[in-house]
Image (cartoon, rainbow, N blue to C red; front, side, top):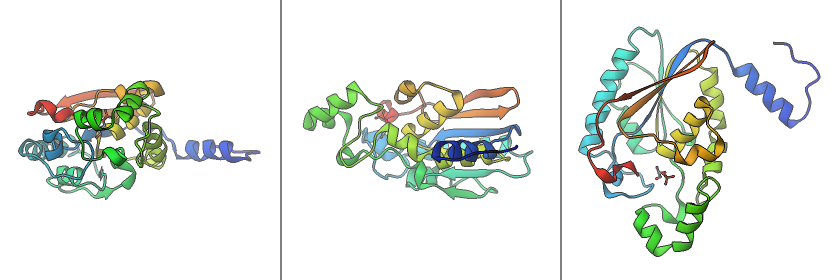
Length: 227
Ligand code: G3H
């Protein structure tokens, strides 16, 4: 790559991005953590551990990863810094694990720990503002989807740079944002993208573009678990 006459912030960022991209085919496996105790209770945010179903998923994920990546020389497992992703990665052995704070779930600020019904009842203005513009709405003392997308930039650059497979175990809002980047979804659609629990989304990047496969390893046991 030849770079000439580059100056200024944006051209500099574009060059930084381009020099980190390559076309070596390699899979990126995206998955939410296994069902958590807060998923079962329908609570937003928090740092709870896994439900029984979530633990079953962590074991199913480990055997899937072992089979899927057994022919690879190397791979890595990325999680957030929250327990539910670290516990989901726990049964996976033989690959290095990296925790990223940038992969933590959207910060629900003053609504952290509430159910959506409690937000609607106790903070009706917040509920309504978010309903009207979920992409731009920022929880008081928390984050918006736009904030999450911005903080994911270093993760995206690092994923572009990797030549070996990566398994990303993260959270709904974060995976919506990452998936939208790889699947080239419009910004406005990000908060509505479906990222079901207990499902692996395999993204394969290569010279012919991006291919996607989904593997549903089990059903979400609890109906409120899709929070
Ligand atoms: O706890 C947060 C959720 O995973 C994000 O979902 O943006 O649809 O409320 P939401």
